[in-house]
View 1 (cartoon, rainbow, N blue to C red):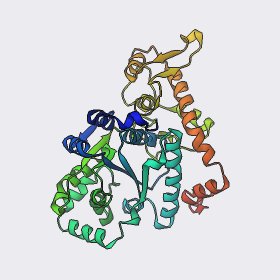
View 2: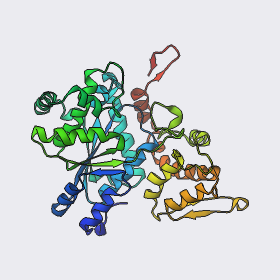
View 3: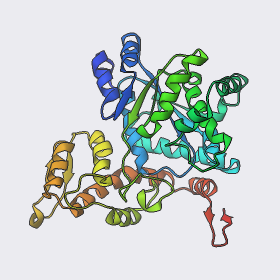
View 4: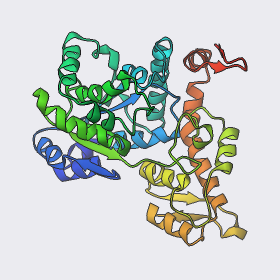
Length: 359
């Protein structure tokens, strides 16, 4: 997937199509097209350093691969300050270790899908969010934003409680300001970020800053059918899960025969495995008595076969298991060192039965 000479000869339309393919929604398409007439697009994706990244993170990684192939300048923001502000999901004492863990694991993910790291820039939120200029802009924004707008903007991202902390209300404003301080043309995220993106579109011009474009990925269901979440153990596959743990979780995954709705296995094929396939195909290896091997040329063909029950959930799961093991093995190897094991233990200490945390 590395950019080659052919990639640099892409037309504006080809770049635009690659940048926006497989997205659920794009706000500001005209802005993207206008930039592409002049130069390559600058885009950023941010992730709050809270729970351990899981295989769902391959969804944004695939789009980041598309952006790079389209010649974009991509910044990945490790939002350590945001992680604390989101109802204190990550205490200050663990933030530095979790941010370090995220950087290692995301670099390992990108390498496992052949994304060249030299095309990327990694930034920590606290590298600039504690500066005098940024702090003054936070105060300027707080003088404009109503409590209603701040709470509405964070409704699908910030943990909702009956009596919200002020920190959670600041969260959308900080994310909007990141667009200016990272000097980008577009922000990329899941469609669950939409209200924060429209918040940014409203308030950034009021601060005297330009309105950015926003690129939104669909949300991929977890293995239990709902949202894939770090806090719901059975809904996600950890990037460091062993092949035995992977097999166990996939076996338990919701994958009803003929049901293509809320199907996390199929959604993962659509958003990750097909885009990553060098041939564009998906191969299911079956015994001759179950129909023999079958190759699907695109996702639509796979979904239709499953809907018609021509493909059994067990065969689909076995195929996904094989593909996932190929993606995860380089990451497992990278973290199978004393240094990485120690970092993992320090970033995510295990709670013992008394409720305290063992390092």
